[in-house]
Length: 591
Image 1 (cartoon, rainbow, N blue to C red):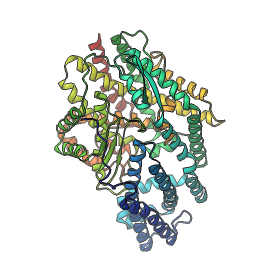
Image 2 (image 1 turned 180 degrees about the vertical axis):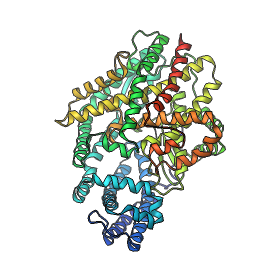
Image 3 (image 1 turned 60 degrees about the horizontal axis):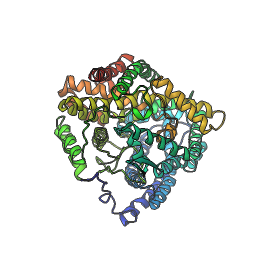
Image 4 (image 1 turned 30 degrees about the vertical axis):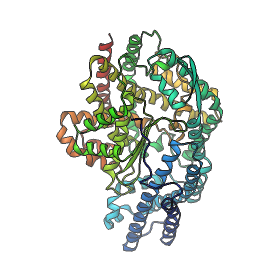
């Protein structure tokens, strides 16, 4: 059985079906009705109105209406996103998505007014009056903090209105150009045309010459689109920096902290522990190079297989493995995974026009869609388990309101890392020595990316913001900033590096500093998994409720449920100690 494509027809029969057209058109009318409700109750910032029965009724009606609209919008938006990310040539889906963006601008303008309104209210009085307010207390307190940094209503409205023609346009330019890009690689004596996702997967080929040729072809291909993508990156960072300054944040990182439900001491503690661990990761890179018989590893060697007998996992193998080992944790998790496979939630087939990487998107309540590019490696099995972890998180959020489900990226990785680690531990426990080495290498490759490479991305983005304050940065300058950041993170262990990673990674074109939350998620998730191994019954009893609460408390409060102090560097060191143990075993097996 080949890697599957997902089933979207049970959501809507087709893009041009009456069901989809009706759902799409209702978004516009629903937003118009919500706008009228806002105007009727004068929902905007300004003089604080008295919290009484009339205001409570208005708040309850408006918040309930927003929740309902967000729910309906999610289904339509995810459906279009699934089409666009798996077929960059689908112009009908792209056109509909563009129409939807115009509609969501109006919703964002209303959200801005809602935040300003909440900022003007006596929140304690509102909480005493309204059960709906009490159900959304965390979100309302966040809104009051955000309101302090808002521009004027007219400026915020204009920013939302301009976004589709500005930052969102740049984001789509990047996604479309990188998804359609193809190049040729010499394989078995002939040149083969491949999409970039397939070219990049050759970084795990056992033949170093194939890896090197794929790397060189990849670099050459990225260079052909580097100028327009540099324009996109300059546009995105210029937009973000301008708005950050107008909203009176101290620096480019500050607005991301509240958005990720953490504070500056937490980020500093985590990054301190990560930097302390870099010498250990360099030990791993050096040991891997020795195992491969390489004096100086290049970028194209970082994901090379170290064991000649590495198993190829068919899709059927992966399906059975995930279902069986999820069942070792709980019947609920096993049955959920089986449902995802049987109901066609997963699109795993690599193909031209499909974006690289992987994601999980919530669809209807408790239901998700997973996009990935399956290649038969255990790394792909691990990615599958990871994305199904996100889907399980969505299942546990299903009974919450849409506003309560708004989970920050820092906490969104918790269930995915937990499920990925379940799969890894199961595979490791069953592995022969050669396969054990390969599995350790796979998980350490992930850890290297999430701890070391993510830090290089953080450093790069900070440098881009600093440079962009003066003018647009050229392709050459962006390449050099990328290399400087990689050298600081990887040291002198790797040569050549990858100067075009700023073209490859879509994260630079989305939310600001969409990088460090992955490190947080990995180490936080490993911490919870370690607690599960120590006391499985206690964690099972708490875990699903924890997942359902990730949009209703900050990371520090949620961490305390498991005895974790996220502001203490020792908490992060403990998570990294789990990785160090794997590095030590890897070095022992390769000696």
